[in-house]
Length: 313
Image (tube, rainbow, N blue to C red; front, top):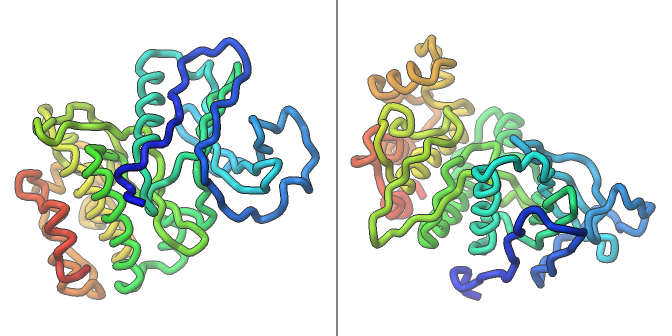
């Protein structure tokens, strides 16, 4: 199957609904469950559609992510539960609809897969692939830093997923270790499309909304008041992620020479004025790639094509 041609037919919910409803399944989803759902008692207050709601596995600005288990198949899913009373503005509603629209338009092995949408009087449930291997952040912490062979495999998967999104005219805008999960085979799964947006490549669309996590955000998001190129922002964030995988800490923000790492504006001024430094255990080829990605001036920052062709990969 050509991933680019896949367009799941899952309607975006119009808020608010008048009664409980279940939006039809996206066909073909399937992940092995740890145990059969039939072992659990059926309690209506712990159910959303055909899913038993288990423990909370993540929490965001106005939503929780629950581990769900399909009552008939025992298949696991990550269910992003959005309480409708928290969707109290047109801006938040538009953000949710945009996230769903992006999830509907992508299918790639390293991008989280949308299974279905469930909607009740109180909740919107975005049912997605469950990545049982946890966060890449915790994987790095457990090893202090990653060997280059392991980092290269994971980074290649990240670049494959992000490059695919860019070909679909989608930018993520919040790439960070916490939004990269691992499946049971330790493959990267890109998640959390709350800040994602679509652009028109032929018209050279620029973006204006400042978003993302400060430690991973490109300098132009803070120090420039003008428009920015979304794809270049994602490339900077990928560079920060690669640096963290190889070094075991974040560039600039964790630099002991930077006493003002908690001050965002001073942090970015520091980035603009300070050459990138590396621990001794990072190879020359990896340093070369990082120097091409972590360029403060987005006009001089490397492209996705340069990354894919780089000798380190």
